[in-house]
Every structure is written in structure tokens, then in C-alpha cells.
Image 1 (cartoon, helix red, strand yellow):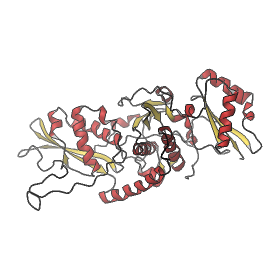
Image 2 (cartoon, rainbow, N blue to C red; image 1 turned 180 degrees about the vertical axis):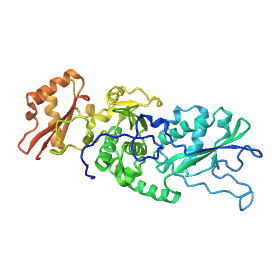
Image 3 (cartoon, helix red, strand yellow; image 1 turned 120 degrees about the vertical axis):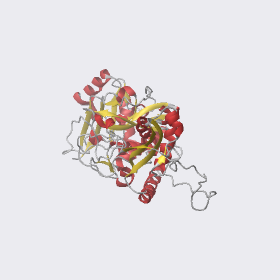
Image 4 (cartoon, one colour; image 1 turned 45 degrees about the horizontal axis):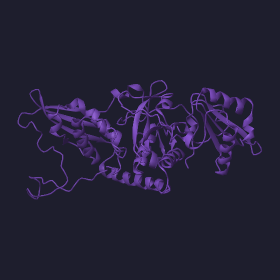
Amino acid sequence: MVRKRGRGALVLLLLLCMTLGSCAGGEWLDEVPKDFALWKEEAASATGDGAGILQEGQAVSGEEGGPDAVTEPPYSFLAEEVYGFAFFGLTEAEKIWYRDMEQILGCHQEKKQLSPEGLEAGLDETDIDRVFQSVLIDHPELFYVEGYSYTRFTRGEKITALEFSGSYNVDLETAKIRQEEIARAVGEILSGIAEEATDYEKVKYVYDTLIRNTEYELDSPDNQNIYSVFVNHISVCQGYAKATQHLLNALGIPCTLVLGTVGENEGHAWNLVNIGGSCYYVDTTWGDASYQLDTLVEESQLSMPEINYDYLNVTTAELLRTHTISPDMDMPLCIDTAANYYVMEGALFSSYDRQQMEELFQRAIEEGREDVTIKCADEESYVQVTTALLDNQEIFRYLKESDGTVAYTRDDNQRSLTFWVTNE
């Protein structure tokens, strides 16, 4: 288990292809690293001959070995389990270039021509960025991709070809080594899930495991990709979100990356998951209880529970109390609460119900849990519960002080409370 450091301000991500080492403000959508764009007026050849994308098994004339020589397919980092949420949001023409970039980036390649069918369908260099971002949103396994560059070939005012290159933070051989390291770590995590686990249990397991084994650190290396989480165990929000996506996709649970802002327009990343046909939001980074915005205990005096469940399988309405979804992302309206943590655990209160409260705390004791979190369905029930447990001190009906001091945190915005016993 990674030991958490002290509580700090919640810092947020920058766009998934940025090369900076920290999270950015709301202007990150205008700062995508295109590296450079070369503009060429082609006099003899307007098609960029020789820059095409090779298909598996395709014969290449003019190569050593003669016209019948067959090239070996390039090494691919692409995962088999991918939920193409961003892909399905593209136009048919954009999907052509998505497949091109997917192969180029997935094979750590450079200087490959984008399919001319895209140009024929009306695309140009202004469409490259949107497609590039879509590929990275769908593919957290492309941990080595930092940005891109392209060359434009023209004849007069007409674009005749676009040559695309990925820019990478490590070379191909280093990327292969890192892929193996990630695969070992992922395999170890997934081995801890029971075969009969439900989709809810799988999502909760991933949420809990990443929080317990990852430390939030703004200046951590590789913090915009999954290597920082699975190997270094230190990251920022984008690392958490991409790692969550990678694990859940591997478990067959549709999950995508969501970009937006929190607080004062600070960039942030979290996830959208599909459980039983319904969509929910998950924010693994904010699941780290040490980053709660409101608390009634000082961490310098009392240790806190590791996990905050306010952001495990929540609705759009709940999410928007603290998060803002990027206007560039067309996300579904999440209204189902069936797989919400508090609903599943019997910890959602519509009023102050002593029997329900007794059963919740008793179950926690039987399961060996050191803390209990409850959530209220509305403001009226929240007032009832806080008045009873805090003002009237009925919490001592359920938690005894014999082994230490009863401590708690409250989040009035989320209408939740967490209680635990500490000896500090």
C-alpha cells in the first residue's frame, strides 16, 4: 500500500496530449501540442509518394527483395479491449482519419499519409486535432504519445496530401519495455477480482485499488499517462482517470475519459462508465479522501479514511455540483442511481432512520471496516441526520468511544458524513 501524503489543494489535469508536467487551467483546449506543421508546394509529386500507411501483408514494390516482398506488420501497442466512445462521436469522414491515426500512434510511427478519402470527403488540416484527441481519449494504453506534427502537400490552393507523425516521450524499444511493466502491474491488479464479481463490484474494486496504491503528486514524472500509476504509483488526475479506464475496459466494462473543469476553471479529468446499460460518472482522483474540500478535522492531528465514495457511480446532477463538463464533449445524461455506491451499500438516507443506521454500522463492524460513510438524498434529510448524529450526539449509539475517539468529516455540498474511531 502506498502511504498517502498530507492534504493539499486539488490540482487538475491538462489536456491528454499536453507535454507539461502539471494540470492546467481552462485554456488548455487551445494549447494542444501540434509541434509544427510544414507546408509544402509540391511541383512534381502532389501525393507524397511513399508516405502511405502500410496494411498488414501488403506487398511493397521497390523494397529490397523485389516487388513480391512482404513487409512484417509493425509492432502494435493497441489494446484489444477498447470502448470507442470518442470514435462514435465522429463523422464518417473523421472516422477514416481516426483509424489512420490509431494505427500510426498505436505502432509508434511517423510520416504516414492520412487516407486521401478523408480529403475527398471534405476534411483538411483543421480537422486533425479533433481526431487526434479522440484517439487519445479512447486509448489510454498509448502512454508514450505526447503530441503530433503534420506536413501539408499542396498544388496551388488545393491540399493534395497530409502526412502525419506522432511525437513520443520514449523511443520504440523503451516503450516496449514500459508496456511489459504496465502489463505485469495490470495483471496483478486484475488477479484480485473474483470471477463471479458483478460489474458494480469490479468498478468499486478498481476505484478502491487505484486510490490505495497511488499517491497524488503534482510534479510526478509521466503523470499524464498510465505508466505513472501502474509503475511509479504517483500521478495526477489524468493518470488516475486513464488508469481507471484501462482497467475497466480490460474487465469488459465500457469506460471513457471525460475532460472538464472544477473549482475556479481548473482543468480536470474523470470517467464515464456503463453498468447494466446505465451510465454513471466516476472520479477516482476525488475519491481520495485526503482531497476533500471541506472537513471538520485537521489532518495534522487526525488521520483520515483513505477513500471517499461521493464520486463512485454518480448522476449528472450530482457531478455538476462540483464539476463542469467540457462543452467540446457530448456526454449522455446520467440519471440512474441503481449502481451508486450509497444505494448499493444501503447508506443513502431519505430521512433519519435509526434501524437503517444501526444495520449500516453493524455491517461495517462485521466486515472489519474502520469507517462508515452515509449520504442523504436531499437537504431536509441531511438536516435530520446531522442534527441527530452530531447535535444530539446519537452517533454514540452506533460507534463506541471505548477504543478511541470518534472522529468525522462532513461535506455539506455532497450531503455526506464519514465517521471513524481513532486513537490519535
